[in-house]
Length: 179
Ligand SMILES: [Zn+2]
Image 1: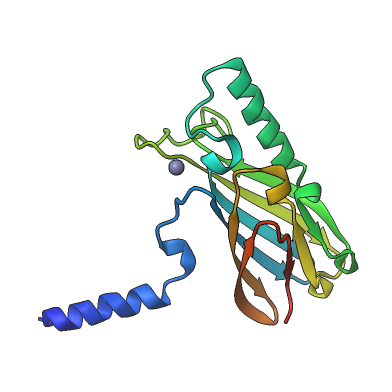
Image 2: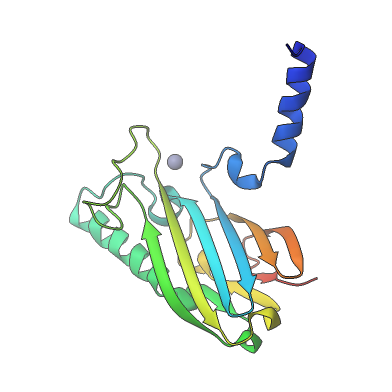
């Protein structure tokens, strides 16, 4: 049996080494963006409270809300405008996958049941094919322009050169991929 002190220490250590994703994720105004840079591909993973995109966190109830949700989804699917990767990398948008139970994405049949609590998220995966991903020196993130409620983006970058964390706070939009 481990002593309570041991257990406490272990809990503290575990909390310290776990990646950011494991922490309390849902904070209005804040989104998480993981960027994985590979030689022929740059993939971005977005995790955001729905509130940041829509101002509400449930299925749309009126035509106006439905239009708002459709517009937000369309903006995210137009990912070359939202994520502008350094031209040196020669990237082209390959695939966008959006998941949000509250919005019935990907399809109402396939989506998990909407969570019962008051909050809801959207997750997006944005894959770009690149001729030389390693030459991507920066990505210009257009989420603040597109979504007024988004205030901060916590980034985690993984590239062949290593890993790093970064934070974008409105109005800054450019994040360096190499240092
Ligand atoms: Zn919420």
